[in-house]
Image 1 (cartoon, helix red, strand yellow):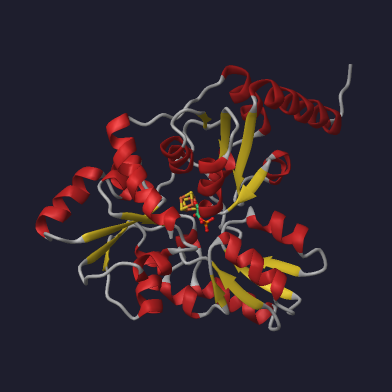
Image 2 (cartoon, rainbow, N blue to C red):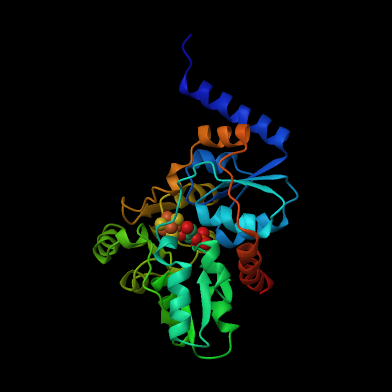
Length: 307
Ligand code: 13P
Ligand code: SF4
């Protein structure tokens, strides 16, 4: 029997819907996920919105279509739920650029330093931190801290952007996003030449010289809102390609140009519909966090969510 691709897709989606009901599961997806994953998700959002959803949901199972630190945050906030990461190897190279041991050594060298930790980090690193932040609330989080000795881990670019916004000095950990780092100033200048009327919107994980060329810098949710609320018809987009799916949905008459074809995060793209189906079927791969670490990491996440 010959099945068309559409038929196969239809069957797969129906299977996921059925399993989701049986498992009392919710599917959360980040804006960088493949379009077909965003389409089957119950909720698509940026890192902050996803952690808020994970903390609030009454589902028994959370299928996290994102990368490991996101599923781990869900497991920290909802310890009694089963948290699944359909592709066990979907990690975040930036999160791996800081570890708890290195951070402890730093804290020993700089006594009294307060640690602001980007959610793109492991549970162990969160447990060593005073407060977490995402790209949408980093400015608010740092603003809430008194004292001048603050280290921002692990994203040097978001840390610098936050410091500049507040006119405050922050110690910056030398981490970065390997995907956003591929975007060069030449890419932006070339795109601007090709689309002179377009507004440039970029993520703060981009390098400093990229942010300086932008009309708007913000988290994925922030970029989508900006595109929606701005009269402009054309946008040059400096963040991971997956965001284009939502941008086209919410602004169907506007034009979006990805600033570089290299803006693809292989980890974010490693989740497929087949893997989501299999995760729901087998309730694996499951993400769990050691209880002692979880309790400490939750304090840092809770301080952020309280803001
Ligand atoms: P936001 O969706 O919070 O902007 O995060 C970007 C990111 O790199 C997630 O991995
Ligand atoms: Fe990590 Fe960058 Fe991929 Fe986000 S886009 S998961 S920060 S590597």
